[in-house]
Amino acid sequence: MKVFKINSTLTNVPKLNKKLCLCLGYFDGVHIAHQRLINEAKVTSDDQIGIITFDSGVKGKESITSLEDRLNLFKALKVDYVFVFPFSKAFKNLSAEQFKKKFLDKIHPSSLIAGHDFKFGKNRQGDITYLKKYYTVHIVDFLKRNNKKISSNDIISFIKEGKIKKANEYLGRAYQIKGKVISGYQKGGELTFPTANIKINKTYVVPKFGVYKVITYVLGIPRLGIANVGVHPTVNKLKEPILEVHIKNFTGNLYNKEIYVEFVDFVRPEKKFKNEKELIKQIKKDVSSLKSLQ
Image 1 (cartoon, helix red, strand yellow):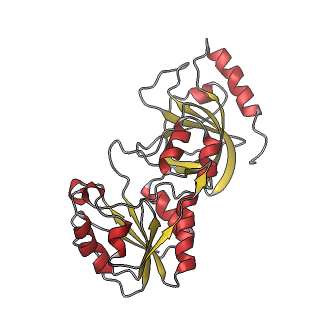
Image 2 (tube, helix red, strand yellow):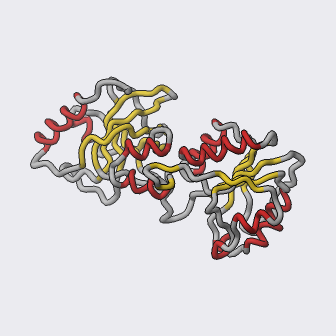
Image 3 (tube, one colour):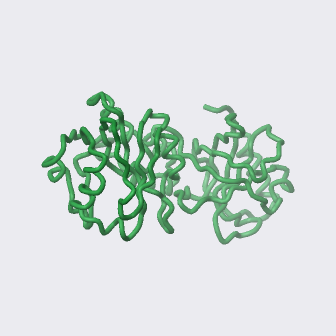
């Protein structure tokens, strides 16, 4: 898979010598509706498959997936080319005509594929009707649940509400956060439950504060665990939430290692206990509830 990072003014757009079916969208989450669109591209075209997406490195912008996550998912879906655009003022001010001339006409896709509501350009002035004047465009019907279009915004809401099973159903996989294990307050060890502390990258959607059943990938091996997302109200109230994971039957040193944590199920909300003794009692219950990777 070839990745092109396009600048704000579209002056580094490559010329391709391949026939390309280009999928249009943002693709945050690469959820089941996005997967359907990519698979439709494969069915409707014998050409190579391209994707446009955006860099998620924007202050205050929450994403279901980091750019690295998305690229890994695209690769797994056998996408051939990915064009990554910046979230910048200059890019957002490009008109639909400028985007067409500087990008689409340069890569010259053999066909485009998108949902009915795809819009682009300053003030979202470009749409499917505009594109059909110049290109062969395939429209993919919305994928729905309960008569409502599946959207990244709904998945973000599910994650924030602790409805992690619902979010995972729409994603077609478990919601996942990747982060580096940092030095914590050593309280997990003191409470007889050693934990890996992960600072949550601000580009990720922070799940509802609480305890979750998780699967943690350590050196590529899935391990069952219990995780807390929150601010430690009983032991030491933190200013920013942290992801703290107790990995079942694991005793290795994970400091400074990057690990993936998959959220499988919501166990209970985070709460402040009367004392550490009550907290330990509850943690024991949480850990004993872990049965299997299912």
